[in-house]
Image (cartoon, rainbow, N blue to C red; front, side):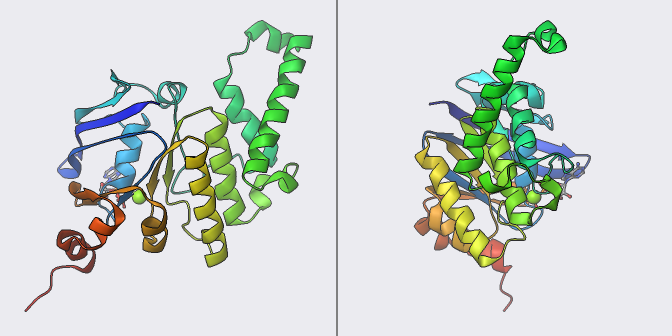
Length: 254
Ligand SMILES: Nc1ncnc2c1ncn2[C@@H]1O[C@H](COP(=O)(O)OP(=O)(O)O)[C@@H](O)[C@H]1O
Ligand SMILES: [Mg+2]
């Protein structure tokens, strides 16, 4: 089980302190939710954790190794994968091809073998396709395997993104607002799916604005407001925390 530790992490954009000295750690079969009002710094935190942005200060340790200077591919190789707030898929490719590409990125091919389309390449290709199909089954997408990804519903596309993240072999999965734009039924299905990731032994970091989802499935919650961590705890504690209530409702005026 990999231990992910975030230590006094800051990211500034000029004068904007998007995140400021954030610390927390997570390990094991856990759903850790990151919540906070719009602009609180949640996506910026994910961008730093996955190598898409370099933090201004602080460190990110994965099993005691500092990963804060690595590229997205480097971070991914060590076992962290993510989905995006705005879906990123190869829209023209089929569903199974999208998942296969992700797996290919994780598998090291002999360059020459792939150029020559050697028997070993074709064998690997079959294995990758079979494995990809298993990920599709896991996410209830198998009936769409040969459909063009961009033609599917929003909910299905979000599930393809998760299949792609899993296909990299990552043990830590970061989901940025996976239920955004979903109807209530799709949201319920997504909740079940996220719980299932925990059962599979994954560590899930979840950015989610739907409080019903957050309170229902999180083991622990970190609350950000204006880039600062204002609370951390179990759902029950967070629900009743006055600082959290204030951040969400705004200061009451008298
Ligand atoms: N690439 C960027 N350049 C400049 N400012 C940014 C950039 N990304 C985010 N910000 C700013 O950082 C703050 C936090 O944004 P973000 O992490 O997207 O918040 P959240 O995901 O919690 O809504 C906001 O003030 C936002 O405008
Ligand atoms: Mg965001």
